[in-house]
Image 1 (tube, helix red, strand yellow):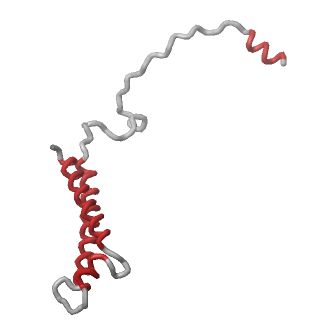
Image 2: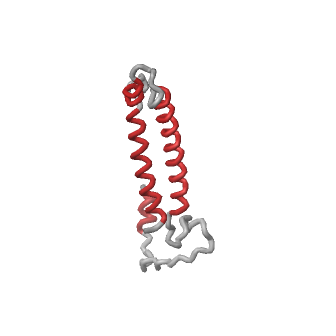
Image 3: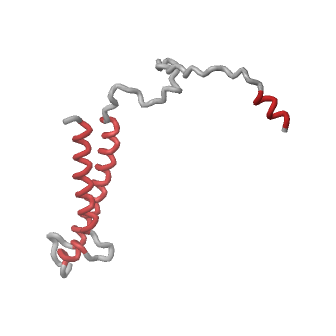
Length: 117
């Protein structure tokens, strides 16, 4: 298992967790934060603490996903080949294919036909 595969698996897990955390939130005061808060007198799992936790976890997971995506770009196996174009590289050796052998035209009728019009 190479490094890119590990990064890819971590990105999928973080993306799944991020979707869950975002779906739990409700911008109108509902969702998980309203179901724990109840009367607002509870300190353990109160509305404010749950909202802070969900907000911090969203930002943490989003930052973690961004970092994992950037690091996975470094871990991509290039296969020893350059990703640059061979046209831009003057030192690149290419195998030129010979042109097909086309006989030269000795008939001048096409040149005189175009001037006759």
